[in-house]
Each structure stands twice: as structure tokens, then as C-alpha cells.
Amino acid sequence: MNESSASPLVAPACTAVVVAATYYIIRVYRSSISKIPKEGPTRPKFLLDALAANEDVYYFGVGSNLSRTRLENRSISGKKIHPISFEPCVIYDFRLAFNMTGIPPMEPALGSIEPLPSFYEKDGNQERNSRQLWRTESKAFVAYETNECHGALIKLSAEDYELVYKSEGGHKGATQFYEEIEVNCVPYDKSKEPVKAVAYRGTEYGRLDQVEDMWPSKRYMGILRSGAAELGLEDSYQKWLADHPVQEPSLFLKKVSINSCLFMGVLRFGFGLNMHFIPHLQTAMLYQVLVLPKEPAWKQYLGEVAAVIILFPSSLLGFTLRTVLEKSGKTPPMVKKFIEHFEETM
Image 1: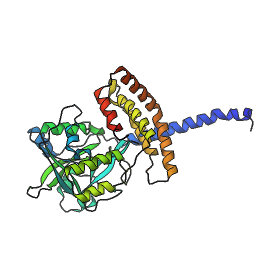
Image 2: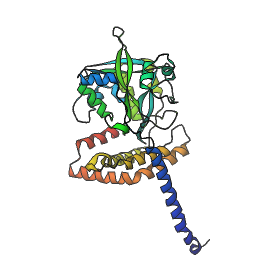
Image 3: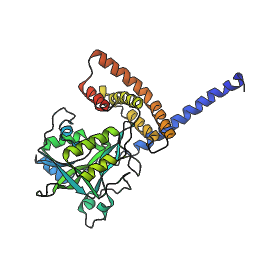
């Protein structure tokens, strides 16, 4: 086929590619927004009563909140959080799940707690009956040896608890990723009685659309492992965390992702733009091309290439914004903290 005969095919081919890409983007976006509920989760009555009376609240912390230092400094208002007490404990019939939407490919999955089948099988389970926690087929990629979840039992003032809740995306109504549920915490210290505490479970909107848990990032799991050691969780639980598989994007993909997140953060929260749909769409597309390390190397390579293509426009804009801010010396403290947060393991 010569050049003159091939040229008439170029325009139809390009049109077909554009149409196919547009159809794919629309389909992914519609699928992702279809999960948004009409209203936000209901808060537990015991918690609302405690907050109304300005009473202290017990909170069950997992994930990065295993570390007292991280909890103290996680308030988005910049105000320091002051735990009244901080000790190891265990809850039964729940597991630590890596099933929460994160920031792919840097943070493919975040942690929450998830009821185990044994939770629903208990006769007269008032928590199940009154709260009607939906049952899922969610499964751990690597399950812990017993039906329990270890974490931090944290006593907070009503004011400090609200700071923690807001830092986890609370008070956002239908689009918040976590809901508060009631759990029964058993302290490691046998001289203390079990206490009622609030814990965070992923909402249906915030959960990943898959049966088996995603692998967390090496950075995120490192935070959990150091927090568990700092808190003194059981050796068997620490070993489970240490042996759990993780994933780590290439250094180049990390850099592309950080600059993209910077620009997407501006679209979400900066200058009153409120353009949430663009970051939402990009996240949904990135999960479509995310490949776990257990897959063949060629699949992982293609997944990274696809992720770079998706991230490139926002990454270029984010890099430009970052360069301008750094050269002018006007980088906001929150932006500096964000960059340092993700570059700490690079």
C-alpha cells in the first residue's frame, strides 16, 4: 500500500480511536459515580450522645493511627491532637482489610476494619441487627491466623475526636469513605475491662470494587509495621504485617504520580474550583490499569505504561505549578507537607 492510498485511512482511524477512548472514559466515570449514595452514613447513637455531652470518646485506631506521633499530628487544621490514653487492644470477629480506595498507583489501597463471617454468625448480635452492617464477600489476600484485629485503644476528648474524624474525611456526607461503627475493645492489660469504642469501616462508596483485598504500598505498610512495633502489638500480628505482600511502583512512576496529585489537589480544594469529577475519573481509570506484582512482568510493564499515559497531562501541569511555587518561595506549608509525605521513601 503506497502513501497516497494509506492517507485516506488516517482520519477514520483517528476518529475511531477518539470515539473508543471517549466511550471508555464515559463508561468508567458512570460506573464510578453510580456508587455515590443519596445520603451519608448514620453516626452511632452512643457516639452522638458522648459528643453532645462533651464526654471523652474511645476510638479504635488501625492503619497509620497505630502510631501515637502520627495521630497527634494528623489534624488538617494544624491543631495538635492530645490523646488522654493510648494502649494496645484487640477486637474479635473483625479483620484489618486493605480494601479502601487510595491514590493509585502510589497508594493502591488503604486500611479499614471489616466484619468477618463469624460476626454475622453470632446469635443475637445486636450490632448487626441495629446497625444492619451490610455483608460483603470481601476476603483478605493473606488472612491473619485468628478471627481478630489488633490496634490502638485511644481515649480522646470530644473535641480531639472530631479532629481525628475530620482528618479521615468525616462530615462529607454521601462522598465520605469511612463510616463510624461500634466495636468492643479488649485491652491487652488484663486488669482493665473491655470498653465500647468507635472504629472506621469503609463505606460502600469508599470500598474498592473487588472481592479480594488489594496489596498496600510498601510505604503504607511500613507505617503500619512501625506503628505496631511502637505500640507493642502481639508478635504474631506483627509477623503477619511483616509477611504481608506489598507493591511498589517504579521511581519514575512515583515522581509522575506526585506531580499529578499536586495538580489534582488544586482541582479538588484550591481556588474554589470544586472540580472533583476530574480527579474522580482519573482515579477510576488508574484502577482499571493497576496490575499486582504477582502478575507476569510484561503485564506489570504495560500497566505502568498505561498509568503514565493517564497521569501525564495532570503530572505536567503539577510539575509546572510546583516549579513556580518553589522558585517564588511561596509553596504553602500543606503542599510542602504533602510532597514530603510521599517522597519520604523515594
